[in-house]
Length: 246
Image (tube, rainbow, N blue to C red; front, side, top):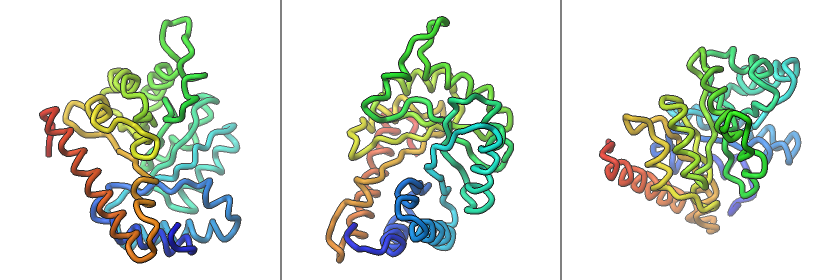
């Protein structure tokens, strides 16, 4: 970071892009790695978003997933204690284990489906006896878990063909799309594959390419804003190409 104070850095980014971004997605691992000081910075960051970008959705990129009894407390921490609007979770233990998250019908639950990392295919592409790949089965099960209308999916922009398969299985569910920017995901192909029939329900996540657009302490926030504006322009251009523009 071009400045040492995590919360101050985040505040500058929020000031710069608060009127551009539809959501903010703190990755809890980076805060937890700093111990109690990191948790304090996380709490300050969430409050800053509430104060300066009150219309933005705040997503805890937590990737939580455990036994039901443990998930009760994970959900309380994320939704009650820290007040996140949504969280990323792992469905590996099944829908029954996720129920503590799903029971918060006013909060979003984004289930990991096809992640953006290079090794995602190792397990997520395994073929099942049904003929589906594992990530496709996860998408289908997530649609069943969506009885309260609060479930979405995490699908990486690094696999636009698989994103299209997920959208076909879940035509109306929101999709959180990591992998744009530093991970090299194809924005235009992902917008084409990932939006719903109305050209919506896709949250495009670009982290490092926005917040680290410059290492200059005097101009990093301005550079972040320019990067966010450019990303929004490219999204709108891609939507217009699909005939689904704003």
